[in-house]
Length: 160
Image (cartoon, rainbow, N blue to C red; front, side):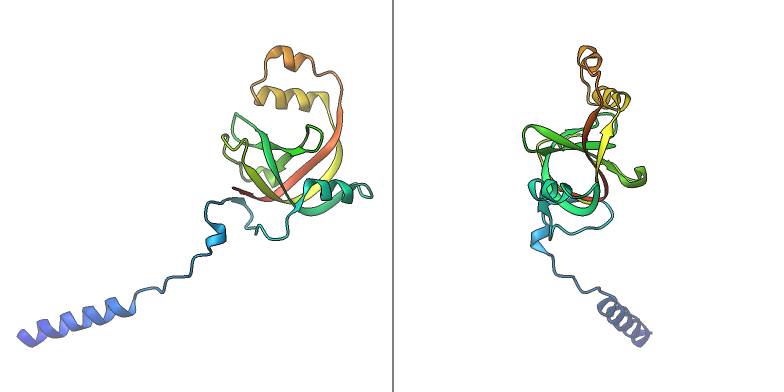
């Protein structure tokens, strides 16, 4: 009986020592980053000035770009605006409406990967966005003209 107990304890110790997983090294450069949508890396992101220069010759392009978040949909985080030069912004929507970003991300830096396009945003869409952003009825009613701007369909987002 004494040998049975010793054998059982030895077997359990052996199994416990062999069953442990080796820890993967942690990439310190990713600490403090939040990821949404497809898995993307912060490497290779261009700034918005480079993106705008690229878009002078195109109507659309696949890019990875970094900028400051200036607004986020306050209903569910289903779109965000990123800062462009001259107090302008670029609206970012998320591929196939598959993911959202935190509603409190304003002021943080985003790295987004996907397709940028030059588009005309309709008055209806601009009013919808203003409503989602919590603007006053007066501000919403003041929207009377469509706006030609950059829009972005992001497949992946990193927020830092």
